[in-house]
Amino acid sequence: MASFGLDITTTSGPVRGLRLSGGAVFFDVPYAAAPTGALRFAPPQPHASWTDIRDATHQGPTAPQPRRDVFGALDMSPYFGPGWIPGADYLTLTIRAPATQDRPAPVMVFVHGGGFVAGSTRAALYDGQSFARDGVVLVTVNYRLGIPGFLHLGDAPDNRGMLDVLAALRWIHDNVAAFGGDPTNVTLFGQSAGAILVGGILADPAARGLIRRAIIQSGTGTGALTPGQAQRVTDAAGHELGLDPTTMTMADIPDERFVEIMPRLGAVDLSIHDTFHPLGGLTPFSLVLDRQPADTLAAVHGADVDLLIGSNTEEGNLYLATQGGLIDTSEADLLAAAARSHRRPAELVHTYRTRRPGASNTELHSAIVSDALFGNGTRSMAAAHATTPGARTFLYEFTWRSNALDGRLGATHVIELPFVFDRVQLPSLHGPQALLGSAEPPTDLARRMHQAWVSFATTGDPGWAPHSPAHRDTMHIGETWELSTQARSPAF
Image 1 (cartoon, rainbow, N blue to C red):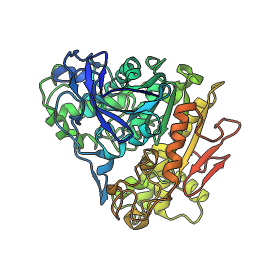
Image 2 (spheres, rainbow, N blue to C red):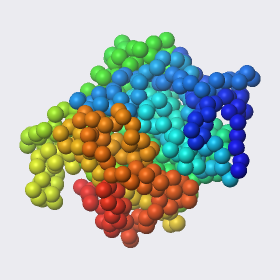
Image 3 (cartoon, helix red, strand yellow):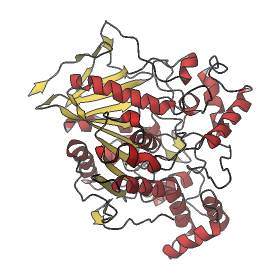
Image 4 (tube, helix red, strand yellow):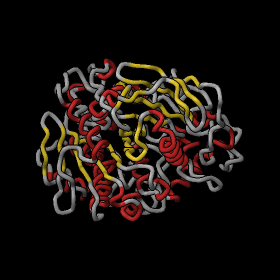
């Protein structure tokens, strides 16, 4: 069986990792130059090479960001990690590799979520030891967030955070073989904002040849802002900063100032005529595109990339939890939620009420938010991919319900991540205010779900029938696994 040492030579220079049980880890290996000054708004630049061995045994800095580790009464620290750890050299990868393998290992590259404004590779949920244990090279990516990553500027490229992920994929393509990985078998996967980035990359010709498979967890293929919507955020940022936002006018503004104004940017109304905020006002940032990824996906990659895509049954519960909405939703609250995504909110509420007889206002509120943010855009992306001749598209819905917050959290946004990463034993995930609540999840759910993701990355088959226009197969993953021929939450 082949093995490798803890000193690896990359195209940038040598790095020294750390031996752990079942494999090795290389923390914060740079894939691009530190984004400082005006470079914060430029495309990612090559990192300067080095000749001395670079220490990759310790976790390093993270992208500038506000703290978001508490949502209402819910502890979100396992998801967001320690927040902002200052340091310029944060465009880095963390690589976890099996200790030995008979042949080059499949590679999985994870893009974290966090509303395009928060998150990092340091979150406890993203520890990749389970992937290395099961013969996968797991790579997690730090990328630019907030104003440096996603503010629309006339003299800078849009979607700089996505350009960072593309640069990371190119670095991985050139270097992962040295860590035991197969550069021809790379699966890009992400959750929430990270999943939206994965969808954007799938629809970008620049990704051709860099990935073989993709997994979109609780994302949407219709979550991009129009340039007009993005300009409203830019105008608001300019007002807060007291300048006309350009690369040069903002070059000397410290990151602390950008982080300080971000909460106020979230109040900007991005509804323009009949175009709603595609992410319901949850964040001022997203991809900025003329056309949605779901509308361009088939023409770019089509059958070249296998796709596993899905969402959770009660995605909206996380956002209702921050506002007390899981306790009681009034009719006015329900109509206000519908109005954020539909021109005729009363009609939309009536449709949901008709199709969900007996549901409470709170349940209807969550369903409307869930579909508007993730469900509808997930189905659009799946349909766009599945209609391409030869495409292999697999759809899932995660149904297991957490009993956190007195049993109300349910199958919410982010709840599938501990199962995908096989991290359900993490202590910070357990307790009445923690993501998994106080009840033990089914003993084999994490093992089985994690293995489905590994199987998909290895062979292109997660273990159930593919989704297609003719056979709308969806695997419902929870206490039991049930393959249905019709998605449970149709788009409205």
